[in-house]
Length: 67
Image (tube, rainbow, N blue to C red; front, side):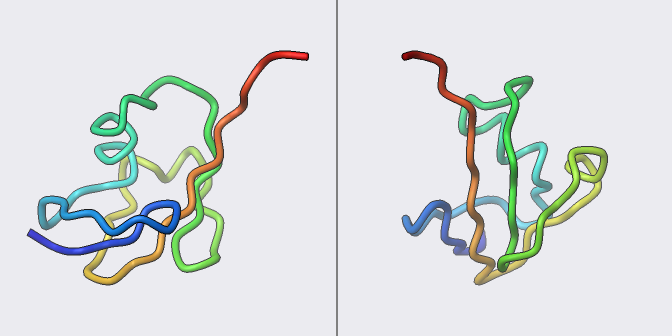
């Protein structure tokens, strides 16, 4: 298990987890989301190959409808 920060909250996740795995774990799989790791944007096409490392700071922004 590794420790990361997701949207300013500490979280423990499995070693070797990818961005796509994390989004699925958070219930965001298939939804439009922008993901940054350590302030660097991870393009959607790389979500399934981009591994997350110990201590990474991850920001996830999703679209919210409404008016």
